[in-house]
Length: 351
Image (cartoon, rainbow, N blue to C red; front, side, top):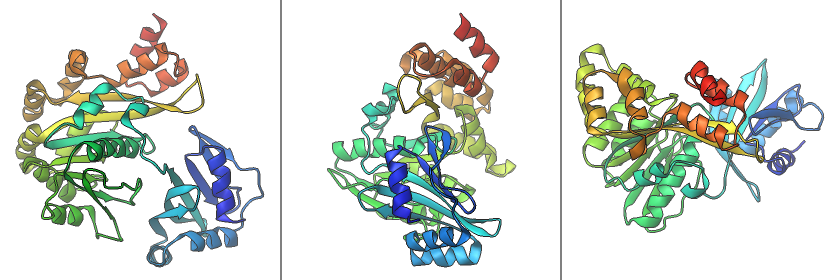
């Protein structure tokens, strides 16, 4: 079986992910549901030959040495894919995430209006958080594209791998890929600050060095956008603080309070009104009150601040979920299962 046949079937089924594992037919994730392709099980030889047909030479060499490799693959007429190759039970396996060929406009993503306002920020740190597959990359790409169409600025993206391929519109856009163009996010970010950027996208704040450089970049007048694998705003703030040694945490609270502009936390739901997905989005905007909360280590108060500032665009996750349910977009079961406070939202939905 050829990889192009698998990708064509996945494209026709509107799959977001393709899993290629020896002993199984290809399996597609279609609107969160794992669905096997109607085909015979793949052999170990076939999965290895598929890897060799899609992996660039450096990635194949890395895989043979470390048994794991990340890279991107472009299929003509179908689009680009983010690929992870790995070993399982002694044979090659691949996971491929489909990347849309064009960046969707912010207006088409069912996001709160306040997200578009964040693209007008002149400086500071904006974090888009959520679980893997929650749409963080798509949201950030749409924000970058909105700025690309509006400003005359220099945008540098640091990605693993490059997902959406931007064309410079009014902005000059440079995209650097981990492994191919830079050895690490920290190295890419350190050198990006000497490349005269106005806006920097960091694919993920994975470690202390990258996080410290991102905060420094925001502090020195750049607009920095990045992601974290956290599920809400208060957890995001605590995760950043906890990266630092205890002796430095007071200092970083002060720096973060000065630079953080917003935290956008996303959770994706399967729609019940039509095929597709819709995000529930928690939004924290860094008002003076929020900055004091961060500075004074009172992050437990963030949920209450969000609830009492809905008029300026803040939204809690559970409020966003309830709104999707009452608008007939998601099921009651999904709403309760994904809520931060299931008992509370169950009573709210029953009211």
